[in-house]
Image 1: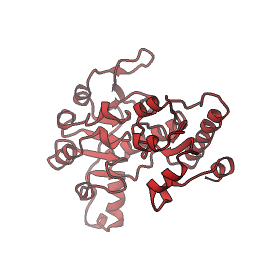
Image 2 (image 1 turned 45 degrees about the vertical axis):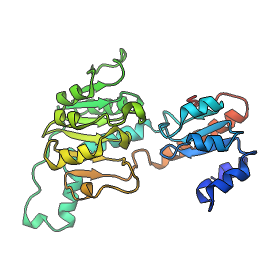
Image 3 (image 1 turned 90 degrees about the horizontal axis):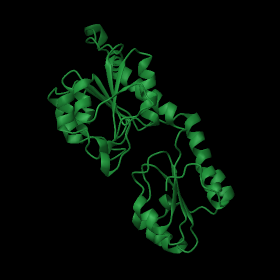
Image 4 (image 1 turned 60 degrees about the horizontal axis):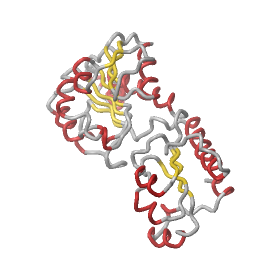
Amino acid sequence: MADLDAAYRVHRLWQAADRDALLAAVADSVTGVVTRSVIGADAALMTALPKLEVVAVFGVGTDAVDLAAARRQGVRVANTPGVLTEDTADYGMALLLALARRIVEGDRHVRQGRWPRGLLPNSTRVNGKKLGVVGLGRIGAGVARRAEAFAMQVFYTGPKAKSDVPWTYVDTTQALAREVDFLVLTCPGGPATAGLVDERVLEALGPHGMLVNIARASVVDEQALVSALKKGKIKAAALDVFPDEPNVSSDFLAMENVILEPHIASTTVETRMAICDMVLENLAAHYAGRVPPGIVG
């Protein structure tokens, strides 16, 4: 924020007592918007800012940005690809390990004084098991590479097979779930993937299968997941994203076999600084008449 203040006249929309009044007051002067990926920029915001030229997204997701409205209005959209790949992939693998080996549950077992009354039930081996990756982009490939270090067999699905990767392509999410022990979601959000992991996919994953979501909450049918966990149709889940953040379903809060995280897959100091730098680079490039390095559209 200090760097933005130093280079631009910044209006803090989230602090405005009357959002619409602020937008009306700055409509003829604002040419850029900086937004978090989970907040985005909708068509109404762009319409309210007729001089808008660029939307700089803090993060990689653009599902909350109305890209069609941006194209109609001639607004550039830029995000921060690449800089959060490795930390997010690390986190996805960490969640998988924590879930399978009951690490978070074990911590509660000790802290709540349950250990003297009995041992924690056995956990699940990761080494040599089958991993399914939904969405083999930068982050998905990063998770796959890490899984290889655990001698896991890696399968993936997405719009099409990729010729430059060594892993096995499966053409549907349901078929992938049927094939693997662990299903990790790393695909983009948006209409194309909304509800992709539904009751059928969870049934295919099966009573010993585990789900890790570091993508977007919209990718999973939440009620279907709650039902699958309650009925034992899948064994466990680790979730870093939720439909109404920071609010989390009370159903999940009551479950021992669910790891709940506050959307922190990319929140290392190093990655957040790199994202900040790239947001600033995207803006500087645009206003200098260059194409922003993170251009989306």
